[in-house]
Amino acid sequence: MQVQAYLFYNGNCEEALAFYQKAIGAEVGFLMRYGEAPPEAQCGGTESAAAWKDKIMHCNFTVGETQLMASDGMPDSPPTAMSGCALSIAVDGVEKGRQLFDALADGGSVQMPYQPTFWAKGFGMLTDRFGIGWMINCEQ
View 1 (cartoon, helix red, strand yellow):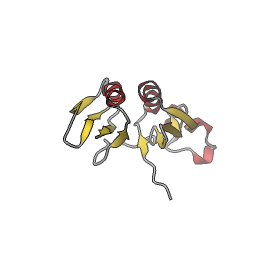
View 2 (view 1 turned 135 degrees about the vertical axis):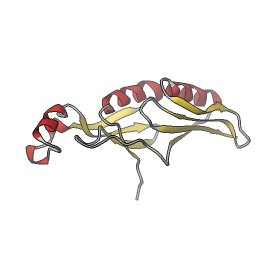
View 3 (view 1 turned 90 degrees about the horizontal axis):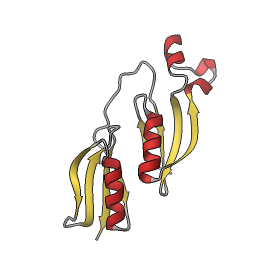
């Protein structure tokens, strides 16, 4: 059994994927757009289906050895903020951690700057520009 995070981007999944490719070396695997689904599987009304045809219905991408899944969400569904969880990246080196932290923080908000702590050589918490929480940790 494997548990994977599934991230919803409220209509800007493609922008998020491009950001993660540049910021943290993410690699996109499978990607399907709403317009590629058969008509009987389309979500929302006709107007929504037309507006969302180029939006991402489902994709997977990898960061390091971890696969994540993502989508633009559902047409006609109100956006919801991610809360109660964060994605955590364990790094081997302090400088690598700082590099990833700074890249993810671009356009986002920092809750705890990347710095040494009593448990780690480097640790920081942020919310990226897409509302996804991240923690970067370089253990002692």
